[in-house]
Amino acid sequence: MTRLTRDDVVKAVDRADDVTIAQIIGTGATVEELAEAQAWLANDEPMINDLRPLAQGRVRELVDILSELSEAEEEEGPASPGSASAIS
Image (cartoon, rainbow, N blue to C red; front, side, top):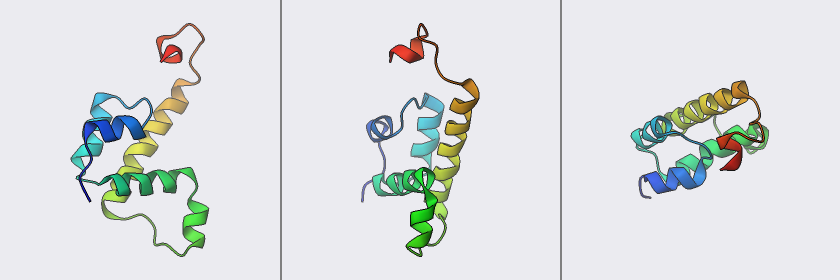
């Protein structure tokens, strides 16, 4: 298992800014751990039903970082049709 690179994070996390990318890489997590964190965020019920323990360690750190990013995006609301973020 290899540690995350900037390219890995950019591919996996939409609209992540440089600070968030640095935080994610700074956890020392692997691609597999990032995927697991994203699975927890997407829907934790199947993970719990599979009797997986709650996210811990680096996966927990990633869940926290990604959930903060998600909350920030929700607070900003949908992009207006003419905004730069709607174009990208």
